Image (cartoon, rainbow, N blue to C red; front, side, top):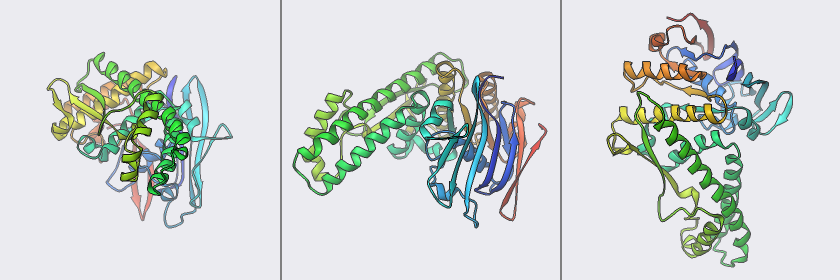
Length: 370
């Protein structure tokens, strides 16, 4: 088959997995087992086939199996459209994460050019009612799936902002120290803003065009305070004008790092933060599915989906609808749950994996569908 999926996954000293080698055929993967067995660790390993720190945002040294802490390695065979890549990523003795693609050293950004990986994890269930940082990260993850260079723009902006904030904390008032940094922030910041707006447009269109059991979320990008300058010139002017206020605060108070993703349950006209727990979960699922549909059109294949404890807060009807949509998309979705009965509606359309744990070591076995 063509598309985007992993056909092999190998783990070595990764979290609770001392060693594992698994083969897949591109269908969804239902992973079941008791709490604490190591199911989520498999999803985290798959998340490392994309740029960044993975779905737990953990430091490289924290992914190593304890108590050995010798380092870890995750590798696999990635099918991306009509190409096949051997991907390896690892950390040695607490060192920085390294990547190799087809036997050659590569940057994490290079992963974003050959793979698209999205996830929905339990900690995101409170996304709409917690701090703005989580919503920005959620939006940036989806934006990265459309625009892999979004990571470079973000890194450039954050580096320049850290240096500017250092000047502000040191109460440096000479404008010459700020001009070059603000120019860099203006260029990369405008790119970040444009990329986010593009992603929102893609998500909105993918929701509006689909018939789905999940609610449509009307999305907007807003500023937590003031406005969001859109062009490099406007952002450069805003940074210069804000210096006096920023000096008093000791940090930069204007720019895309002050943006927030605002969502409304469209059919009811109710802000997402005021919806019930089940409705908030359904809105998140809707956005992940919309992202997958948009990528199937934009990238040429739906992304790899990581859905940890996805059945939580979904009734049987919506759970069955979710599985139907995943299969219709042709996405390789990796899903976890405590028992195989949670995936019964997949009815032979998925591979089933059982994870058990004994004395701190996870064991993985393929099982027939229920």
